[in-house]
Figure: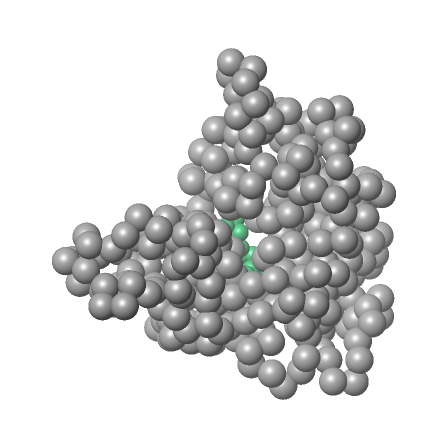
Length: 290
Ligand SMILES: Cc1cc2nc3c(=O)[nH]c(=O)nc-3n(C[C@H](O)[C@H](O)[C@H](O)COP(=O)(O)O)c2cc1C
């Protein structure tokens, strides 16, 4: 962990940014970048890890994050450390490097809404991990699910849905020495994204222009969200009559297997980008800005 964090309060995520340059502005002032929106602005999928174990303090913090998340979301996310066998094939093929730890996404089975909640709440853990300098990667295919299940507690009415690989990025020091602005630029340019107009495809130009800033900020945060195969299958719309937003699954995106999970992830990003407000679950669910 970076020395600037050694004094951190373990109950307070606000002080947990691991990057020197996330904590200090150019003029040395405390221009801190340790909020969830900052994590959204710098997160990218990480496929190469340095293979070092996650330090005890970071692991404890993550575990502490998962407990309330599990209660709130009625999911059963579990941090599993040091199980490289789960990623043996992906590591051997070169698709991943040094992957060994994961957050197992266990949730009630035969429950479509649980997939959305799992996306929403596991992405919350992803953003916390990002603020601690950890890299993450959602995996649906690049793991041995049966092997992963051996290391989890899965009740009869639950299933292991997906996982998030977690660990220190390869070349950790170079990564941690990047400034916040450099990390934002890397996020902005590292992959193709659908445009704002595509994310709001069901809106006409007039309504789009009239939409409030919180809606635009929400969509922009959702554009930075991970999605299976980067299909970005969610669109958003704003309704000026009642000042609400809605999130929809775009079935033409070809993401039928993971669309509900991606819906949950996109809703979390939108909510953080929009500031205050809350979603109703489901395809077409409404966001009420407070
Ligand atoms: C539900 C889900 C499953 C994913 N499965 C895999 C996977 O098996 N292997 C992989 O390399 N990436 C996987 N990804 C990562 C996506 O490819 C990645 O998030 C997407 O390309 C966008 O890039 P970004 O995360 O860097 O923004 C998955 C992402 C999600 C949300």
